[in-house]
Image (tube, rainbow, N blue to C red; front, top):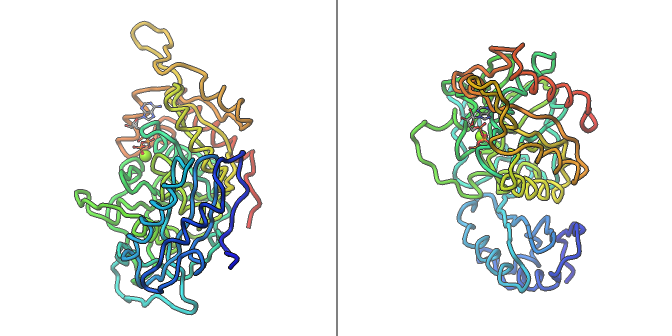
Length: 383
Ligand SMILES: Nc1ncnc2c1ncn2[C@@H]1O[C@H](COP(=O)(O)OP(=O)(O)OP(=O)(O)O)[C@@H](O)[C@H]1O
Ligand SMILES: [Mg+2]
C-alpha cells in the first residue's frame, strides 16, 4: 500500500534509503488500532537530511502521552537503520473535527496542557496566527549565547520604532523573559479559556515561566511540550501584532520542530558567539530551519567585543568575526555585532533591557541596528 507519509526532498545526497525507513516504521504496530503506523497514515512530515531522519507521529488526542512508548519504539526502529546518525520523532495529536474546548468561565487562566492531549483546532500544515503579520524565531544551537537578551532588546527596540510587538518565551527549560522584561504574576483569563498576556516596555509578553510556579519542577516530555507551546500560540490573546518574536530554547529539539510545523514562521534570527564551538551548533540550527522551510533572516554575533574600562582597549574574549564569516559562507545576512558589556547583563537582570534604560548608549546601538535591519528586510508576505 502506498503510504501518504510525505517526504521532503533531501538537502544533500543521503546514504539512507527511504524504503528502509518505511520498512522500519511498518514494523511498529499501534496497539490501540492493531495496524502499523505507516499503513495507518500516522507518520507525517517524514524528512531525511543527510544522515538525519525526522518525522511526526500523529496519535489520537485522547491518548496523548500514553502513546509515548509507541513514539520511542518508532524512533528506535529508525535509529537501528544503517547509516542513520540521529532521529527526531515527535508525537502530535490530530484534532477531531468540530470539537470545542469547554470554557471554565472563571477568571483563572486555563491550566497548562500537560496531559499530552493537544489543543483543538490543530491543522496538519503550518497555519498563520490570526492578526499576527509575522512570527520571527530567535534561535541558537548552543545555550547561553544571548538569545533571550537579543529577543528582549529587539522586542523593545521594534516597539519603540512603532511596531506592535509580542514576545513569546518558549524556553520551557529556563524561561527568562519574565525577569528580563520585568513582568510577574499569573496571567488572567476572563473567559477561563483564553489567556491575557502581560505587557511592559511596549511589548506584549507571554512566558511559560508565568504559568508554572518558579520552583515547580516539570519534566517536559514531547507531547506536553507541544501542547503547552500550542496553548501559548493559540490561546493567548496576542491582539493585532506586526511581529511575534519567539525566544526559543537552545538546540534543535521538539520546541523548534513544533513551532515550525504548527505555525507559519516568517524567519529565524540565529544568535551565536564568535567562537567555533558556538558556530558549529549555530550551523546545526540553521540546517534544521532549512529542513523545516523556515528562512534564515540572518546571524547576530553576540559578545563580539569587550571594551575594557581600565586599559581602554577593545578585547575579543570569544574571538571576533566568526559569525560574520559564517553568514558569508552560508549566504545569509549578517545582522550585526553586540558587545559584551556588564550594562547589558545588569539591565536584563533588572527587568528593563538596555535599549529601554540607556537607549543612546553604544551598547544599545547594535540592537537598534538589528531592529532596523529586520524592519528593512520585510520578512515574508504579510497575511
Ligand atoms: N552582550 C552581552 N553582554 C553582557 N552579558 C550578556 C550579553 N548577552 C547575554 N548576556 C548575559 O549572558 C547570560 C546568558 O544570556 P541569555 O540568557 O540571553 O542567553 P540565552 O541564549 O537565552 O541562554 P539559554 O540558552 O539558557 O536560553 C545572561 O546573564 C545575560 O544577561
Ligand atoms: Mg534564553
